[in-house]
Image 1 (tube, rainbow, N blue to C red):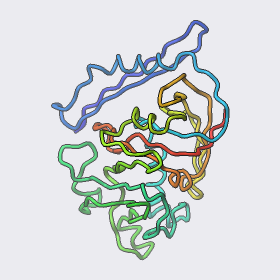
Image 2 (cartoon, rainbow, N blue to C red; image 1 turned 60 degrees about the vertical axis):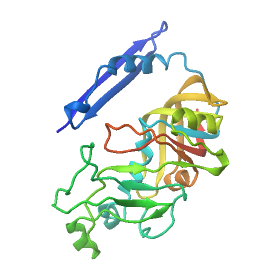
Image 3 (cartoon, rainbow, N blue to C red; image 1 turned 180 degrees about the vertical axis):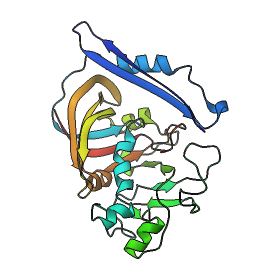
Amino acid sequence: TSFEYGVEVTIQDENGTKYSGYWWVASPTIEGFDAKDCFDTAVKRAAAKLNPKGHRSGKFNLVLSTDCASRVVTPVLNALSAFGIQQNNSFLIDSVGKKIFHEGMTIRDLCRQKGKTGSRLFDSEGVATAERPVIENGVVKMYFVNTYMSGKLGIDPTIEDVCRPAVDRYLSSELGEFKGTLDAEQIMKKCKNGILVTSFNGGNSNSSTGDFSYGIEGFAFRNGKITHPVREMLITGNFITLWSNLIAAGEDSRDCTSRRIPTLAFKDVDFSA
């Protein structure tokens, strides 16, 4: 079961420029469902985008809001699918057991947490799930192999897909220590200057090379404080390079999502206006 509710609003400034904001909640149980703040949150998110300013191109710290951080996680997980491996359409071919990413990158499949969105005991083939690392300290630990692809590739089956991926907390030593709950606000303070990305506007990625180019919206921040909205910018790069520049992963993923992706931060990301 799933109980879901979402709101999207559009507001217009005095010049006729429109800005949109959204918010949504979901829960597998009615007891955990609370949608009373959806509208207010959506309006505030839209209003925060008013009066954006230009931003110069260059390499900056990228802080990805938990609302959109899955955009840089999902392509990595997709690249671990046996179907992509068999079709020679994955940038992670022949990567199991190898340290491909930054040592701070750990993604686990927390598929058996009772009552949580995305949890399940079996995949669609009836294969039992198991909580295990997918990528641990930068080392690729597994591919997602159903029984059909197992026969095609001649390798042991695992499970058809990740169920409930979760990124572990991480804070680079270059950012110092922090003992409280690591969220977007604290990560921006640690990074000091950069761009907080809150949504993506189009773009694409190449599943065989890992190259990407995404349009973004968000906020410039300086000394850990948001200064102004930014829009109509691009980030470009490669997923392996991006994750090699990981400097922080928070603990603020939303409970209503099956993908437990918190606020993420990367250094030296290419932004262009």
